[in-house]
Picture 1 (cartoon, rainbow, N blue to C red):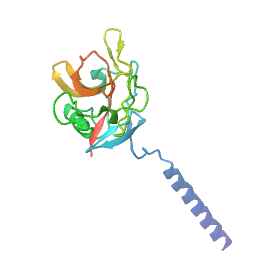
Picture 2: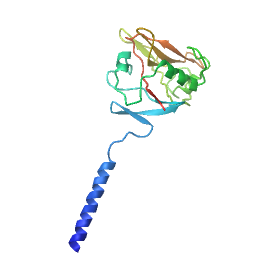
Picture 3: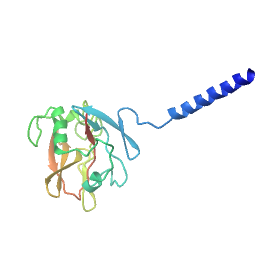
Picture 4: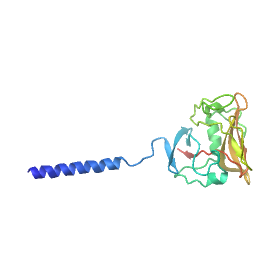
Length: 195
């Protein structure tokens, strides 16, 4: 009888140890997405989920990437480099209505609460755009740090000129618009998925 109790205890303890090993499996925390083994915070804005921090994988030059690098990043199912329509939806969540220059959008809702040279944002939408500027070739030459946040899209304005979202704060309150860079330039990267 004592032997049977001892064997039962060993089995119970072993089973408990096995279940604890299963509990330590690495999981992606809620409100994050794992891209290239790095967890990025996410935020729901309107009908979409956005990464709330800039991509920071290999190959960056000052935190910036070319459009070729941006489109080559392996993403989890459902995630993508934003399109022009994705940026339009984001700006509508910040109050924009129509046009390429979204004068009625409130850039402060998209901007980080620190780092901007003229006025800091409220980040009320959680997008947390940092004023890193962008970089142009050759060089690269860094431009507009402190006053711009520039993000690649997968949409082209004309061949060789991808559309970018620019959050620009030359003065209070600043503006938000879609423009273009050339494929050899460097900008920040965010990702999006539909909810």
